Image 1: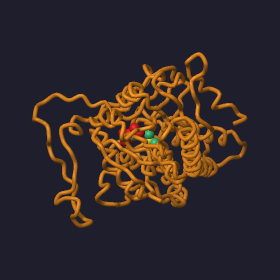
Image 2: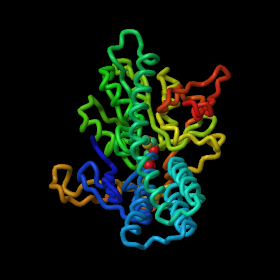
Image 3: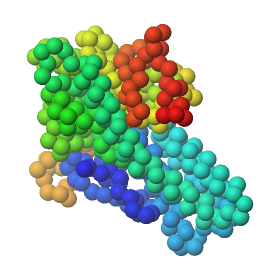
Image 4: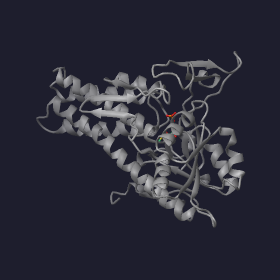
Length: 382
Ligand code: MRU
């Protein structure tokens, strides 16, 4: 399986996604600062992956501090350091809620640990490291459940008479490279393929950063899933083509508000509008860590603005894809110099356009009032 994150007892390495699909190179992440830069520079990206890398980056720093006897004995002091570094890590990217959700949960872990009478600074760091490591395994299990739940829902609700299997369109990258493994929306595609329900997968290029053509296409080829790449502008023509017969669009999410409005990669909203026009099911696949009940609607979600250079230029290997392993990735300007640029990294899809939200505990649909009620997903009985 493709692995974006390799972690073993304080040794963290990430696959440098700026060099994919041409060069597969792991880079070490030893400190919270390394983690912050890797996230900001998009060496690692995707909502679940950035949360896990941020927490494991700090876990690695704490592991080294313990080994080198540089950790304070005072629990409050260690708590203070951890809180500061968590606050800093959360500033790396604003839209995906998984990052602040993970930071909030781990802050509670260390605060509770510090309340234990007689605790030592080392106990606080150990509790943090354990909780961060648990997140890695939990995310993989959740993704496998999301994949299964989504595939079952699509098989039950999106197959039209005469279809032999389903054709699915996905956007951005939501696979192993965006998570701890398997993926969310791409996990649904993987699950459909493993259950022999998938006729064909289509992925968008996902301009401006090309997560679709660089990462999703790479994963689909790697897993030998029958798949075709389209540019974002071809989606309407694809949905209109009855010979293709797309049954469902499945996307990931960076933050799902309490009312179901969903922030995801720019271009998602356009696909949801197209899906409604063409009578195609539109599904969001995300773990519960992406659902933010504290945010009422999409209007309250901060959308990250990215540099103009991502739109005015494109990255690729000098010498072409066939070049040797140590090729350099170069940036080529493709837009007229001096043009103004608007580059929001995400957009908001209104919940009214979403037919279902696929989570690890089931697929949520709108209630009889036409609204999503996501609070039930967090019932302690689940
Ligand atoms: O800017 P990115 O590449 O971090 O954006 C990623 C996406 O929008 C994904 O679709 C989303 O995070 C879901 S990842 C499982």
